[in-house]
Amino acid sequence: MYRTIVSIPTTLRILPALLLAAACAETTAPLPAPEELLLVVNTRDATLSLVPISVAGAQVRIALGGTVPEAARPAAGRRLAVVSAGGGDSLAVVDMRQRRLERMIPLPPKAAAEGAVILGDTVAWVALSGRDEAARVHLLTGEVVAVPVGRHPRDIVLARGRLFVVNANVAPCPPPDLVCPDGEPWLTVLDPVSQSRAGGRDSIPLPGPGNASYAVLGADGRIYVLSRGGADRPAGRLSIVDPVLRTEVGSFGGFGELPGPIAADKSERIVVSSASEGLMEFNTRLRAVVRGAGIGIPLQANAGVATDSRNLIYGVESGNCAGGPGRVRVFRPDFTEVRTIEVGRCAGAAATAFIPPEEEPASR
Image (cartoon, rainbow, N blue to C red):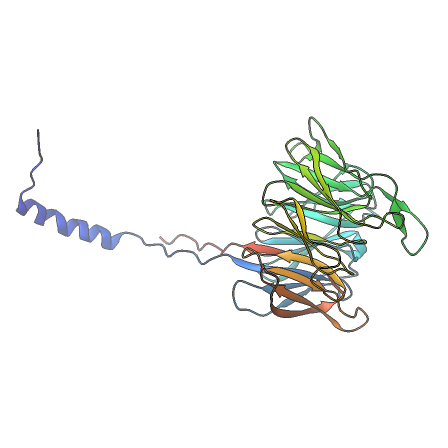
């Protein structure tokens, strides 16, 4: 057996050099934690509220210009957020870090933009319900490329590298509904790289009451789609879609009439908003309606919902759209209330966003 023996004098000669090297080594302080924001669309004010929720800070309301449709929903990337504006024929791009409107991007005529998803902070895909198209919008150059999808698309979800476009399949009808289901809705599957329909099964039917309007990706990797129904079949229904098999694998009722936007937490919960029922809950592990119609958390004119990284729930009350402000009620996962946040008039859809810290240039 061999051993390497270092004499004491050698050790003493080496140690100062090691200490000097350590003292001269460049040190880099750790970056601060990402900032988490709540985004709320105030349709009557035509503003977007940015509310810090991970650190202390004041709410900022960003004017979006023109009119904002009631169907507008914010989508957030790492720095940029987008929301339908200009009556639905423009896309407002907001810099969340700088708290300002970055630009307005014109969309094709009669676009009626609704749901959107951001890829890599440079590209947004937007559902153009008025044109039966999904638009790829480059957020830096303003280039818009439209791709035909199904009838009256209302939302888009990214899952497994594919885009799943929610086609409501509605048609004009007499007041007060204005649009009514015209058959079963479905999902169109797009490849965001080729900007065309994905290979394999590119259409997923959603039997049920019709008027599919909202979708989220659950923590279990499945897509959850909320169909609102219409005058003849007003009871809402939640569909579960497997993005790998590209088929509906479950469908559940019990959400009352014409439920609204939905949100997924980081665990096993889908929260459903409703103007009449308040906040309701579906458990993805149990595949059961835990809190359905009749036992929802009561909110006044609940118009939207979002969840954050701590699984807190943000229920939006639209308020008096003629004059008074809306508000957001914040709940713990057990639905005990934490606080209330005042936002703008006619508050609507909401989302949360993570903004990573801006890296400092390397020192020389």
